[in-house]
Amino acid sequence: MIELSGIPVYKGIEIAPVLLHQEVELIINTTPIEKQQIDDTLHRFESIHNKAIRELEALKDKAEAAGQGEAAEIFGAHLMMADDPMLNGKIRELIMKKLYSLEQAIDETKKEIMGMFLSIEDDYLKARVADVEDVANRFLKLALGIETKGFEEINEEVILVAKDLKPSEASGLTKFIKGILLEEGSQTSHVAIMAKAKGIPAIVGLSGILAQVQNGDQIILDSIQNKVLVHPPEDELLHYRQQRDQLLAKRQKLDAIKGTEAITKDGRHIKLYGNIGTSAEAEYVANYGGKGVGLFRTEFLYMNSKHFPTEEEQFKEYKKAVEQGLEDVIIRTLDIGGDKHLPYYEFKEEENPFLGFRALRFTLANTQIFKTQLRAILRASAFGKASIMFPMVSSLEEVRKAKELLEICKEELRKEQLGFDPGLCTGIMIEIPSAVIIADLLIEEVDFFSIGTNDLCQYTLAVDRMNKDVAYLYQPLHPGILRLIKQTVDAAHAVNKEVGICGEMAGDAVNALALIGLGIDELSMSPAVIPEIKALIRQTSYEELKTLADRILNCKTTDDIKTILNQEVEKYDH
Ligand code: PEP
Ligand code: MG
Image 1 (tube, rainbow, N blue to C red):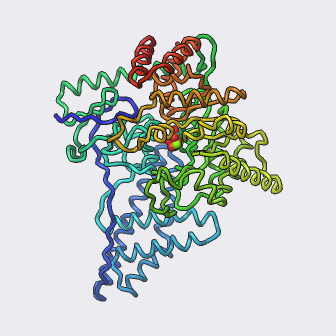
Image 2: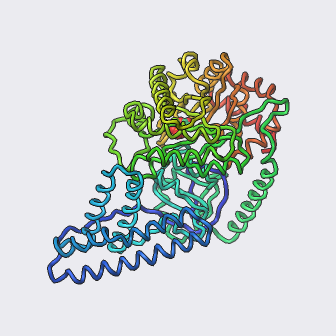
Image 3: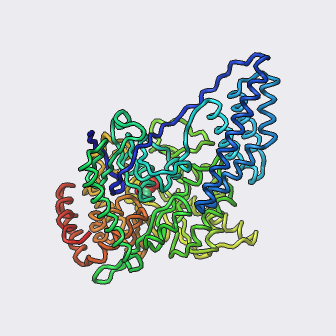
């Protein structure tokens, strides 16, 4: 048996066979074929075309049988595209007239049709680009003999093992993926955040795991004790099956408090909200007993598209989220750059991408892209409670510019007689130290603050949030971070405005005790951890937590702070 450990993300225990996930490179053979090979090549195309159709029909039927309407629709669109005369005719023409190899003919056709659709000023056709790419890639993989499964094609329980997952891949995780083990990544990498959002136990930063496992190996993932056991003996399996069942029973018990309020014993209400990456997850928040969305990371919408999503596409997505009837859905404007890229936009190489052209800096420089999003959010606000939040604010000027654009969008919508909520609140993320230092000035401009501790820690402690070698220095309970949080709360409360936390710190029981004591009004976390934090809040006293916060603010080291909080959390059933 092999035992490994890394950085645990969402806590849980799972036992399942390994599925290795490796990115495949599509290597295109550009050597021309001989004239006498034309017929053979056309026959090969015919045969992979038929195989692709059979695969897509099977996927569509399976999605329909499972009641997955959206997936069935996508496969239906792919089926139509796979039979499209333009796509197929062009591939045949390139083989016959230009003597292209089958792979090259498919690849060239893909590029040409995608380019053509992208240049058309029609939202519907633009959206078809994704279908062209997916179908052409299916043809290509079949032509190259590459067997890969998209996550939607996995239909038995597995533990996914990979070097890393792209944020766009992570947002497509399905219920059959019981656990995730990655060689790379950190607690606050976006893959880790998505795993938590979906309640999938995961361990990241597992150096060398790919070399230690093979497809089908039985594996135990225990992210509570930070252990991965490969080829476990029968007695370990038995022990872990029992542990897993107990954990499940505990989670079911927490279900019972779903409908209750997140209120301390002495009556302080805490807004317990969820972080989401797609509109569909707003439903998870409600299901887990959360009252609102404290952070809608809209970048996943952009990353999963093949072009900048249109106003209409975004409007539909935001509308779906606000229609869940939650008390608020805080929609954060595009936070791209850093580790998050777009397949259709070339970012310049940067020495320090996390200190570079990202988030608000990007949208303020690309006002058309920004306005499209602001208009979509505004329009969605006519259908349910929504708020807007700007990420990565470092100065007052940035907030003023963003607000000016928001006002221009409101004016446009009024003229076009398109509705929006005139009372829509505007907030900013506090995730850069300069924003904390001028919090008293920034709060004059906005309705609320939400502290993004993932980045605030990265920028304050000068620790790359993605780098596992310095992960030991990434300490949200560092005395410096606690002081910054206190300073932010004081600035907002001085003018009766609220402060939330939407960084990963909020979803940890030990941290939550400190944050509530420091006066935080709203905690926003991965939906799956809401019940656990709610159960904890209901056992605490705000007055006692305020005293606890005073004690930890007087500590000189992170270790001292952790010792006090670890003792405190033991008092509660959690
Ligand atoms: C944060 O920085 O804490 C945050 C919530 O934003 P993101 O993790 O998306 O950068
Ligand atoms: Mg951030």
